[in-house]
Each structure stands twice: as C-alpha cells, then as structure tokens.
Image (cartoon, rainbow, N blue to C red):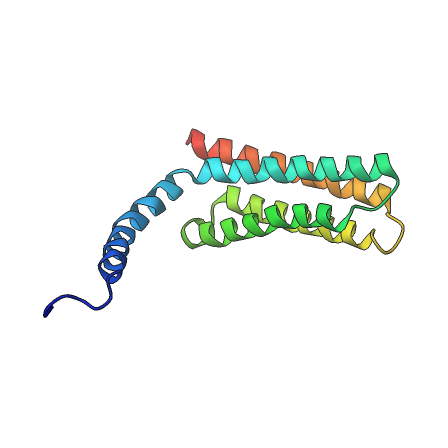
Length: 150
C-alpha cells in the first residue's frame, strides 16, 4: 500500500527515541538530586568489600580466587564511572574529592590483592590499606554530612 512504511518496527523505534529524549533529562535530574545518597553508597560498599576481602585473606591463608578479585573490580569500575559523571557538575565538591581519594586507595587495595595471587600476601600492608580505606570512607561521609547541613 502506498504511504505505509516497509519497515514495520520503525514507528516503534521512533516512539522509543522520543520517549528516551523525554525520560533521560528527567532521569539525569533525579541522578543529581541523589548525588549524596549515591556517593555515600559507593563509600560504604567499598569499605565493606575491603574489610571482607581482608578477612577472607586472613582466614583462609590463601589468595583470593580470580572470581573474588573480579567481584572487587566491578564496584571499582562503577565508582569510577560515578565520579567521572559527578565531576562534570560537582568538580570542586569536597565529598567528590574525598570519594576520588577513596576510589584511588581502593584501586590500590584491589591491585595488592591481585598481586597476592602470585606472591605471598603482605597481610600487614593489606591491613594498612584497609585501614586507610576506612578513614577515607569516613572522610567521604563527613564531607557529605557537611554539604547536606548547609
């Protein structure tokens, strides 16, 4: 029939594109409204994973399995993505600067845990890294509390 598209799914794609064009700005707005919650969540997750990884190394006297290392890398990648996105809007925010420092220290811990797969783990050094992660997570939470207060 003349006037009818030969591609039946095209109208759905166009409508989906329009829907995305309307929804994405709204979603981005919600994202910025939730910055403090998301930053706090990343800090707490990194802190918890660090403590659990150290406990696993101390308890088992063996290095972490490749799958366990990968489970540590995934939150690292998500936290890096979050800080990269947040930097576009909040580059000078103290909580973001603190979160950047936390993410960098967590990356150091993940690298140390990965090295421990091929050489004996330096448990005291791992403990020091985890203690530093804890302090940096506290600094993120304190900065968020100050920002939220005013």
